[in-house]
Amino acid sequence: MTCFRLHTSDAMALLYLESFCVFLILLSSCSSRLIQNASTPNIIIMLMDDMGWGDLGVFGQPSKETPNLDQMAAEGMLFPSFYTANPLCSPSRAALLTGRLPIRNGFYTTNAHARNGYTPQEIMGGIPENEILIPEMLKKAGYVNKIIGKWHLGHQPQFLPLRHGFDEWFGSPNCHFGPYNNTFKPNIPVYNNSQMVGRYYEDFKIDLKDGKSNLTQIYLEEALSFIRRQSDPKPFFLYWAIDSTHAPVYSSELFHGKSKRGRYGDAVMEIDYSVGKILQELKSLGIAENTFVFFTSDNGAALISAPKQGGSNGPFLCGKQTTFEGGMRVPAIAWWPEHIKPGQVSYQLGNVMDLFTTSLSLAGLEVPKDWIVDGIDLTPTFKTNTVIERPIFYYRGNELMAVRVGMYKAHYWTWSNSWEELQMGIDFCPGQNVTGVTTHTQEEHSMQPLLFHLGQDPGEKYPLSVLTSEYQKELVRISSVVEQHRKYLIPGLPQLNMCDRAVMNWAPPGCEALGKCLTPPKSEPWKCVWPH
Image 1 (cartoon, rainbow, N blue to C red):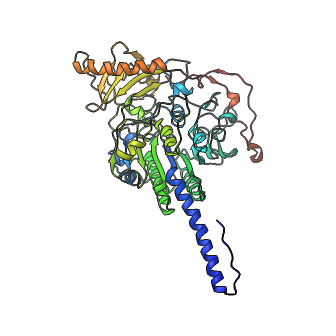
Image 2: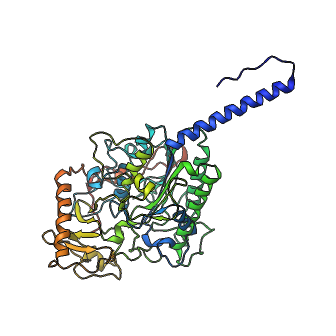
Image 3: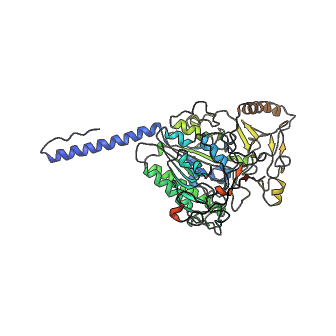
């Protein structure tokens, strides 16, 4: 826009005209942003760590300590049948960001049958270069992309977020395990963009004795700062992946000792508070109607850490690491004022992989031609509460363990964890033994799958009799889905097979300036050994 200055002796007229020009410029700038965001909304994905379906008041948690998340659900759409793509952190996150099952994107292991793998410090693999991530696609629509929190898709330089579409990053490549002595294993680094700015337990304190840490507050302020800085017409994508509900759980002084549920509940209360602050900031800035927000978790609650360090999976069987409902059904809320009618409950079978396809759709983008994705576009569900028929595949490592179609779930393999681990006190299904279902050896049921009606039996305790017409009818339907899936499945190259201490976080970029570089040991790769 061009404003012409008139040559006049009338100072008041000149001042008025200049003020009017400034008004028009500001109006044009605001209008361009509104037009941009009307067609390409901002996108915020809030991914929690090991938070269970039963941890939210809106899903029946009796302590009712999540008022902001409950309000988010009241203002948006609740998904009681939303799933992760794997019952463990790294594969689930890879699936969310690529829209593809871990068996396709390489986040699995072939070192042993049906074993979950992830990305500890010694892992050599990570997100493959040929995989297409949400931020890489959103860049094509002009988005500014930031990740805050836990990455977990590989910690070597070629795997880090800024190499895969993100413009900014504040967080860590791994989980907040530790502290380590920096001799056999280094403490985990925290990054600000491409440079390390410290390490957990050294510079970013987590007190294991009392569970205190300011990390969630730091991640909250990073989110608010990023949102406030987005003042131009470009839309933004914020991937807020905080990890305070992963053992060892932590919360700040403000929430310490506040929950009726103990230390884990303190962490949940602080997350709830933080979600409320972010949503309120969107409203205060006048961009709530132009911002799509989705809240979910990477897998079910870790019952091996419960009750002090783990959450609740409500009525569902078992937890993290398993392909029973408690391991893979997760809390989920969609929020988008003026676009999603408030107070809705969707019975759509959803999956974290849908966030890839849905994000592209919101940005006006199409899935790349000839690229196979497993996620579906949920925007029709947001608009009209449409239910789209689709299956849910329950993978554990390299094995398809179960499939859900409609209300029915067929188990082709069952096991919780091994007798050896159980004798060591590690139990993925504490207090929930179901004879012939929560087995401690891998049991194959391919010839006669265990079939459950999840509407009548969400706890997977009563398999249908194989002699009933209901069993025969539904098995035919599910078997057809499984046959088609296996027919066209091309597994990706497994990324979680090889480990080496030499690739740990000994000397991340930026360590020189901090005086925190450590000397790596000699490279001696080995086949990773995963929990069983």
